[in-house]
Amino acid sequence: MNVLLIGGGGREHALAWKISQSPLPEKFFAIPGSPGIANFAECVENISINDNAAIVDFAKVNAIDLVVIGPEAPLVNGLVDALNSAGIKAFGCTKDAAQIEGSKIFAKRLMKKYNIPTAEFEVFDNPDAAKNYINIKGAPIVIKADGLAAGKGVIVAQTLDEALNAVDEMKNFGAAGNKIVVEEFMDGEEASVLALTDGEKILPLIAAQDHKRVDDGDKGLNTGGMGAYAPAPIVDEKISALVEETILKPTIAALKSEGITYRGCLYAGLMIVNGVPKVVEFNCRFGDPETQVVLPLMEDDLLALMIDCANGTLTTEKISWLNQSAVCVIMASGGYPKSYKKNLPIDGMTKAKSLGALIFHAGTKIVDGELVTNGGRVLGVTMTAPTLQEAVDKVYRCVDVIHFDDAHYRRDIAARALK
Ligand code: AMP
Ligand code: GLY
Image 1 (cartoon, helix red, strand yellow):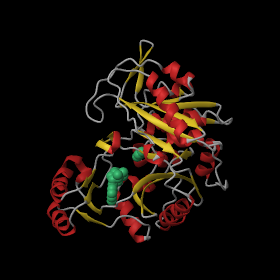
Image 2 (cartoon, protein in one colour):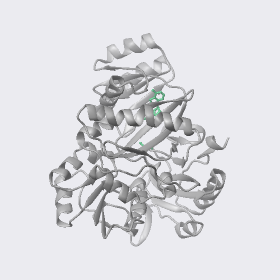
Image 3 (cartoon, rainbow, N blue to C red):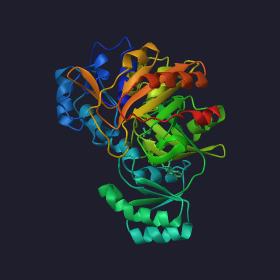
């Protein structure tokens, strides 16, 4: 069969690495791909991931049997709907279903209607009304823009002043900031549980923990994610069962009741509050960098599972996992998540690979035959080992041999689980 992957980040590199281990693909393409993905797939850089018509044409001309979509934007833009209308199968959810990430209000209302545990909330389109409500509720409290704001539309305010200012800042998020969600602050530990689903059956993946803040000790600005590890011990058997029974299954069933068949990957961002998992947010796709630690531990053929999800024929009862831990450390450009330099040469990749690292490219390119930086998050270095401590020790040995000017990474990935 012929497979087309959409995206070019670290998550898509991990997807490409895993898909390429399946015996199923004959031809494998990526739009736009990356220097890392180019090891597995033919990369097509001149088509935009947001150009549905051009992607449909490419899929027809190249007799693609399955399109796998990495990022949220094409899902929210209806790429799966466009492909399906042209008779092309896709792993990813439809535009209706992608609202679960694309609109916080849609997600919150769905959870409220179907009793899926999450923070209490109110929605405002008038800033003054939002401020009145905040004055009554007090801090800490959480202020969110409604639409996709590249992960930046959320302010966790510790004081009343911060919360009131946050309402004014929502104007800066464009259309996403027209409606404001004000949410109860949940005090607990976060974890990410992703699940594959065909719209009926769900197959949860092992839990992972992301590190969103730029600096050690969870200090500094929020980022796209500075590292991850799996499995996350906070999600023990009891909590896993609660996640499945009180969150994942009811959400897929709730969508079904609303006339939406959700096929693809459902990402539940959770807060574990006193042993009870509650939803912080849903994403309509795989997590980045969670994917870079979950897939290296998966024993099953991911592509075969994706085909079953796309066809609505998922019968696998349980995924098999290596009895190991995986850690991914993101090496970012100095200055990220604010401004940073590009085009800095990257050295030491061969040495790091010889130490056993899986190196996923997040923001790189090749200039005159040389690998250089090309984004805020540059590389995700993943190591697996029998224990989490060993994986951590090994991953930092690899990170230490990779060099580019001003490289920044956290030194404490997985530290919480090792305490
Ligand atoms: P979101 O984009 O909704 O995932 O929010 C980004 C981050 O803000 C989350 O990963 C949490 O760390 C934090 N956050 C969001 N909502 C809440 C909440 N209700 N209580 C506590 N922290 C939250
Ligand atoms: N790791 C956070 C996300 O993928 O949204």
